[in-house]
Length: 250
Image (cartoon, rainbow, N blue to C red; front, side):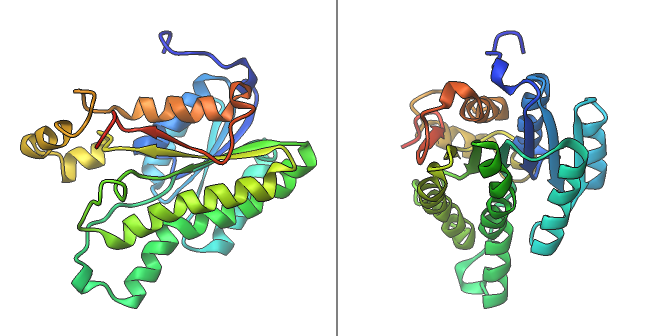
């Protein structure tokens, strides 16, 4: 990681990350840990969570189903008891499961919103009082460029991800007077292990790369680097904005 920036303001900072055991979330957790932050993450995958936390002395976790808001609140309270109140919140957890619009039931729609957007608001609600008391903080919400590209095959997911930017801007206004910055990071098609296992084929990747301005597949580390910047004091005047990490997709 020596080729990347070090942010002195992140050393010792308390960071909560949802969906931190794998994929982009795990790379975010590692990035903060390598900056010397105190990191607590939430996830449902106990085995992956244990493997990741075992790599660092400054990382801990809580097993939690984020669709259960009471469980989410309890998990964050447990993190607070162990590592302190959140100074940074990264709302990362989501699942881009494919589904045919004709097959969607009201129950499935509601479950997808609970998986991909609802927990973001309630996580903000849980940590904001401590950030207000501390005189500031940083919140980063993970979006997606799938709806910009008019991606098909998962309408409940793209609807939720479009809502991330609305949530980001309104909460930036409501919390800005307390010096709490709220931003969104918008990844493109990121080459996580899940994407490689389920959807990345040579043909699909070639077709996608023709729509990027940059010719290379995107590693999760570059999403994490944007998150680190937005959490640091270097981004002290950045709020209510969306930061694309998608290789210039069109």
